Amino acid sequence: MQPFYAAAVGGTVLYERDGAVATLTLSRPERLNAIVPELVDDLEAALDRAEADEAIRVVRLRGAGRAFCAGYDIERGAQAMEAAEAGTTWDPMADYRMMSRFVGAYMRLWRCPKPVIARLHGYAFGVGLELALACDFRVASDDLQLALPEVRLGMIPGSGGTQRLARLIGLGRAKDVIMRGRRIQAGEALALGLVTEVVPAAELDAAVQRLVDELAELSPLALATAKRVLNHVYDAPLHVGLELEGYAYGMLRSSHDFREGVEAFGEKRKPEFEGR
Image (cartoon, rainbow, N blue to C red; front, side, top):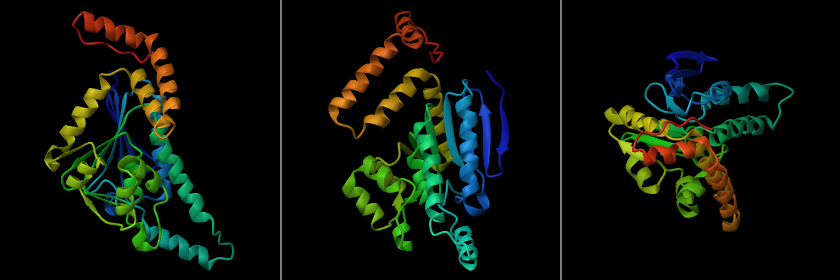
């Protein structure tokens, strides 16, 4: 097993590697991990590292301090807007390009071939919630509050919130959340299907670790394939989804991991998957 190590990635994201698990920590606790462009760049750099490491089987995403992520750093954004408006070359498309960077980074999580678990506590607002929605699993403490409050600022979510939330909880419920900009407590989030599990705050790390351990023991190839099939055909016609599922099923039947899984089952032992 590879040794544990931790390193800052550009100053706003901490990358920790412990065996088969990579932990990415948003590290702006003094601002409740509010998102700024450089954090998004650092997050992508950390994902590059996790994806390139073949020994990594699970990615855990968390926030330092009192919250997962309180959203976009509005104070920083206001300062940038004032500076741009005071100049002579203000680009009205600057915000659009910035949000496009956010969307691209969040798509990296969505496409990551390794399972991504969001560890949620405190607040997950705005682009912070959109970041969590791009992950595969969301494990929450019972003090969690979720919201997409952009409408209360005369705006709408711009990093995938309208699309991912509607696909996750349905159009009517997504309208209720987004068009009212209301906060959702942990219990309601669980009932809506927004989070995978809710536990007392003191038990959050243990709950996340249980899921990490479970996923790390499964076939990396099967997990990556299941994630890709689920993501890419969720809103496709049924016949398209069935065709892709069948193709993926056939491909996995010729894999080492499938052969190992069947043999281990017959021999009543724990399988040793290799991701091939």
